[in-house]
Image (cartoon, rainbow, N blue to C red; front, side):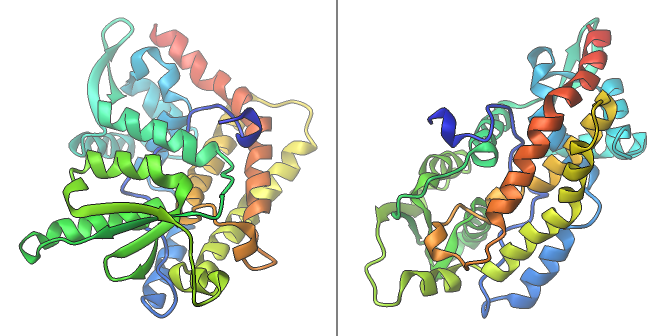
Length: 312
């Protein structure tokens, strides 16, 4: 991808199971999607912050292995107590996302699993890229036997988490730039036998902008962008007035901003601007995150680097 299409070239977290699915279109499950939107704005769960940390800074440790003592201190900087860190690590371990490893002088730690590393790489492209939609769509058409309805649920929920909209039962679509990540996801979950993927354009009969408003709940997604702006735009303004950037403060504010931001590119799959409402807040939210990233990411990296050096 050309450098101009990137917000940055730094690691990003993956879409873990704690990230809620994309809000459903109005008329299908409006009240449910509204409650999910509210949940996105509550205090970040410890597991979510650990995922965010590994995506942002954890891979800079040797072999991606972070000593548990360092992880406890790093999460403590954003308000997570040690028992909560240990419990969250255990959950991520059970889910196959973290594996035990030794860091430095044989201190106990955890590293991303092979599957998690792939998810991290997919997250890099999604969270830090500014997609340039070309107007074509990726269609996922699936049929799952009733005897395997659990797989049907997994397939639907995963497509939703990837940012697909639902056009009809068994027919989901997204901007075509999501094809590579969709392939990775379906292959990893062993769901390719049930799905056909197509690329194409919307030929009618409804205007595409009106169809998009049915396929995605744009009001709910817009609310997510505005909530991010409400919390993190003042943080950016505050840092813009400061000359010094203390590493621990930068680390804390960046990790919290990234934890909130990393969900948005999955809820908002990068629809063409011509299909969005004129007051769409997504571009402004992206600029705020880019500003926080430019101001805080590298300065914040000095804080985990101190612990990384001590572990070695």
